[in-house]
Image (cartoon, rainbow, N blue to C red; front, side, top):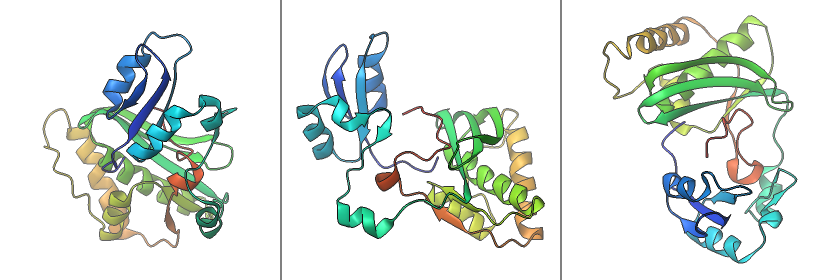
Length: 212
């Protein structure tokens, strides 16, 4: 995914409880801990406040509980389910990377690529959008595309992949795919809207790989 905003992790049950400032620190508390309870938040204050409360109040039968006010939620509205959602994940940045697209409502996987030996979230997000655009055009679909990456949206609009990843033996296949994606953007017209997924209002994007 795109360059991530900092997250804070509340651990209600784990080897140690509290608010942690990195996923690695959080993971250390929940790894091999049966019944671990944890969740990420966008601000330290929200994470700290959650720690005072009950885990079940924030994770209710797997449903997302927004941190936004009712007025903010009303203004944003609900997702357009005539859509697909795309996302990427990498183990390290750069690291092993994969991307996919799913039906926004059902989360049915429509395509997946990878894992590539070395890549970045931004590249994966970019490729996922272009893959989605090509798929929807081929199927003459009027769906929109949701992504949580502003960087990837920018790259698609500019018809370029502005990555600093080094091109070498490990990344050659990935760069070949990038070149195909850029070529597609430069030689195809499309009317598919690419829309930013409102994570704070709706929770993680449906295509998320669940590695938070």
